[in-house]
Length: 308
Image (tube, rainbow, N blue to C red; front, side):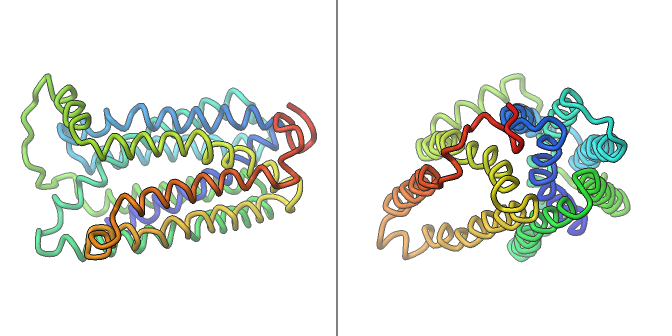
């Protein structure tokens, strides 16, 4: 199971770098890159809730394997069409949406599967092991993707991604996890309504969700879309953006110990609200800093060759 989850995480780390430079190579348009990335993210977000409901009603390991199969097919299709020079914008858009749909089912099922397979007394060490290995993969994969794309092109990058996803599916299948000891869950028609009511009731949860949505729209989305184009125009291409993406992942992983500290004496002494406020200010400052980068004064709607 560990190998499958780590391989899946590494494949997801390959995705943004490879997909971004594939769209830029095929279309030369930053606006179309934004549409492709938005299609993938929207599909994944829209189906995450359905993925959670499915994980409560069907064998979770089978959901993971089906999700991996769908993502493998999307990556393999992009690899073949890019390597043969037949890729098009509609194909990239459809494949990205397909990948996002399959990915939306993976997260909830993988999170719920671990407690089913690991005894309660070993759950904390197991989560620590999964978290450590997944974090390492998330940091290393974008940098490696940048090197592959810069050297061999985005088609080769998707081929590597498809191989990682296929390996993950094979690992989970060989592990015979389909018979997980998942507790039976009552099939209520109001499960979705009850979940929404619980979400609304927990004030800090929907406040943090709102904060993340604002951060994603104002900071993360522009960086994700403009970053690859700027890297290709000013920094030499995919290898540079791979290193930058790996640095972003490293920062996210490095900030986790601070988050854990909020649950301990440090959070009680300084105040969790102070940390959250400082986090929001830091993210806003990071986004505002991009306005001072001379490259951003170029036409944001132009591609690497000036196409829109």
